[in-house]
Amino acid sequence: MKEAKIRGDIINNDTKWIYDWLEWESTCPNDIKSVIDTLDPGEELRVLVNSGGGDVYAGQEIYTLLRKCKNSVAEIDSLAGSAAGVAAMGAARVLISPVGMIMIHNVTGSGYTSGDYHLYEKRAKALKELNAALASSYSEKSGKPLEEILKIMDRETWLTANQAIEMGFADETLGAGMQVTNAYDGLRLTEEIRQRVIQEKAEADKNEKLKKEILGDLELYGV
Image 1 (cartoon, helix red, strand yellow):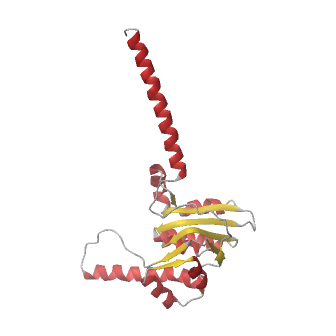
Image 2 (image 1 turned 180 degrees about the horizontal axis):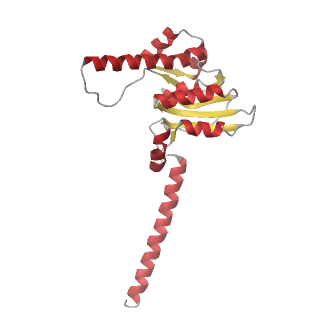
Image 3 (image 1 turned 135 degrees about the vertical axis):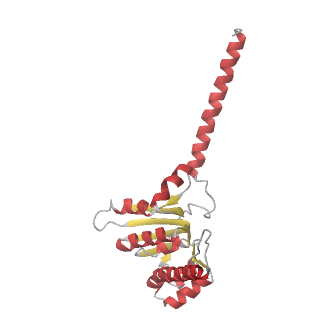
């Protein structure tokens, strides 16, 4: 069994290096594909999910990658929000922690748009069509009609583990004792970064102490 992670912001492949440089947790489609490419025939893929979502198209691509991987299991250990929820629906099985949640809402646009009402009408139409495309992932998983899913999205719905299972978005809860590995999406300080900062600070303190000792010796000898 191989393991992949959907953590932090879901972003496109071209943006990944920026997040890595900033040392922010993130997931792009290539992160998932690189693990899938190493699977042996029939080998299971375990996908750990804790993300508030992000780029819609990247989420769709991850959904499709998992959809093609017949032995994939998504494990929602905290939050599968927005695009992360869509991505998780691509797995053959979806497990959710007893304290996990799935958040479903409408697609939102970003950036400033300048133009007349025709442009805004086109933008609204595009967002509605994208909503329908994402709704199909939840409809396919749960067996619920597309119209019902669209209403759920329109309300911005937060589902507990039990609700997600009852509505067909998850298959069962994770076993007792599973560790929830991350907090809400807004927290960017990972354990890895925390340890790195501690180590670098200790090294800096050591260098500062050595510097003071050298300066003290130089002063002692009148240099």
